Amino acid sequence: MADWRPLMARREDGFPRIMGVLNITPDSFYVDSRLCNVEESLGIATMMVENGADWLDIGGESTRPGAKAVNPDEEIARITPVIRALRNKFPDIGISIDTRRAIVAKAALDEGADMINDVSALSDPKMLELIKTRNCPICIMHMKGMPENMQHNPEYGDVVSEVKSVLSEKVKILIEAGVNPEKIIGDPGIGFGKSLEHNIKLLSAGRGIIPHESMRLMWGVSRKSMFSDLLGRFDVDERLAGSLGIAAMAKSRAVDIIRVHDVREHADLFRAMSALEGF
Image 1 (cartoon, rainbow, N blue to C red):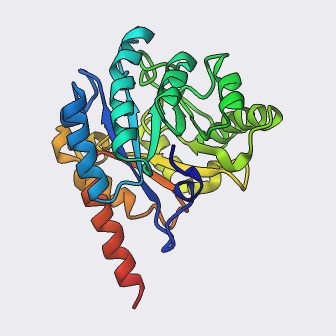
Image 2 (cartoon, rainbow, N blue to C red):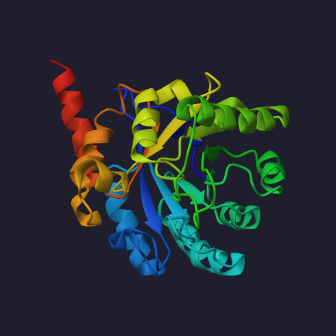
């Protein structure tokens, strides 16, 4: 397994670590991110690592708006051979398992994954015990509702305070169970039960959603539907510029990890910005 400690902190120049998305699914919202076998996944992962990825996030179930749940056995069958191959080829890269289920997370950790990216923030009652037993980093993401219904007119009073409150409850559970807060990452869940206005407010808040100073912050904005509302880019293929525009603000909002489909472009953005900041 990789040493997760340096991979959880921002780069020396203050820009976030880059997490590349690998969807081992037939129905993820971005067609070009869908992978169907180990060979194809290794090829894309190799390019991501060569282009600057610090993490690879492996998912076997789509959580796009309207997505239907996948049988846990099928989810495990999709992700375990890929994680096994990636761990063998990249012993030092961070590997994250994107799942809502403890049984899937355990299978991934057994194959060499380093972190659990729990998009349902401990909704599986067995997830907490797994985290305690395996002593692994955990990302908790805010999601209002479930993928099947989360975008059906979501409402909040104060979205920033409400998201922070929910994350605070989850963090309290983790810390009381003995989890080191330095191993906890908070994700505002952009597009998961939020309108465009909610998304913009959460992104603008940056670390304002983080309830514990030792925690990390992750953003997952890449090519999401918010750019349909914000920019009129209904085609997912046309949302890279918008994604990079938001990513350019990540350092100023103290983001530690940014989850993206386009690793090379984000790495180039951060290198170019970092070079200019040096003068």
